[in-house]
Amino acid sequence: MAITGALPSSPFLGHVPFHLGKSSSTYFTHNSVCIFKVKALFWGSRRSVKPADKVLSLGEFTLSEADSLGDTGTPEKISVSVVSSISEVSPDNWDSCSLDATGHQQFNPFLSHGFLSSLEESGSAVEGTGWIPQHIIAEDESKNILGVVPLYLKSHSYGEYVFDNSWANAYYNYGLSYYPKLQCSVPFTPVTGPRILVRNTSHRDQVFDILVSAMKDLAVKFNVSSLHITFPTSNEWHKLEEKGFLQRTGMQYHWKNRNYKNFDEFLMDMKQSKRKNIRQERKKISAQNVTMKRLRGHEIKASHWDTFYKFYRNTTDNKWGTAYLTRDFFHRMGAKMGDNVLLVIAEEGDELVAAALNLIGGDTLYGRLWGCLPGTYYANLHFEACYYQAIDAAIELNLSTVEAGAQGEHKIQRGYMPVPTYSCHYILDEDFKRIIDDFLVRETAQVKLVMNLLQDSGPFKENVWN
Image (tube, rainbow, N blue to C red; front, side, top):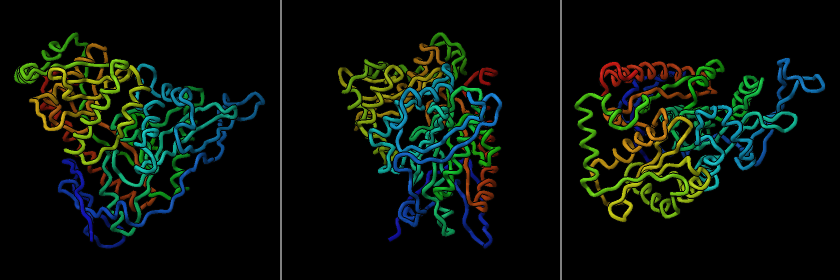
């Protein structure tokens, strides 16, 4: 019996016909809900792939710059390998690459060894959930790690926030296998940041190029359909276009701190009607006898994580249908990330009734997950816990940005404005690459149009947002 399910829809996509040397009525479409056969994605024929069991060598590369000469006067060589777990790399070595890639002022907690290892150790991003770690490591001849790439071999498209399910369905309709594929990303995390993490040495550009070449070589070696790099920086996005990757643009909603001293000063930048609405929403919280608190690091106890997991499951059961993260993940991540974790909690009396999880970066507060007590409802509590408390915290901590996660045009009226996000796609089949490229050109034009319309109708006074 055929099993069907509905794909997520997007308001941005038009219809792009497929023609691979024969007539077809198959389309990439997100304007209407696309129905696809789940067996095509998960139980159909797949490419045969043997992932790295522990360590897989991808060969040696020779640096060409004059300043790369070793003590013997011969060119220095870089060895590149794949490891099947981030535990094969020490936290110091991984985090040195991550910090050099972002800079201390723009530290990204999701790229840290602590966060990524919590995903693996908790059983959240592992082979059993369709995320097989295949991280790429570059070392010099003295075994110094010069670069790392968080990379996964995937058997589905869940937990990515850059939707390619219609691509998979199109492959299936032509008798081809889309899965497995390679995914360079932070699992379950739609947060922009560098993806090729390279130490700040005199030959970092060469190491970057070597790591990108190694990813492409691995895609060929594994005989996968494609390699996807999601939520890279704008700089990486442009570089990767030159290396044969297709470019895709998305959209999120971020709040910007214009050196506000307090929340009221932020409100004064908004139109009168929007300012009034936010004040009314915040007043309703105290009127419902709800108290808000912000906890960091050691203030967050094991009992908080146990309760938050119940809230998280309540959200996934009611909205998403899939809980990607295990209870153990929150305990491990909280212990490893320390003061980089901010948990906003809502209490009625002595009872914890809702919470929102945030991580603190060098200049950004990242809002990630929200949940509440099953069977309860408090008017505007979601807005207070996820958006207004985050703004309060960012002002207090002198952070420049709040990233409030994926999707949600309702964020605009609360001060979160649309910004572009990026992804890069290396498609091995030339026919599909050509068609997907055409699709992405059309999609990008529509994303830009929608962003301009949303910005023009924003909540701020004239000339405030730019």
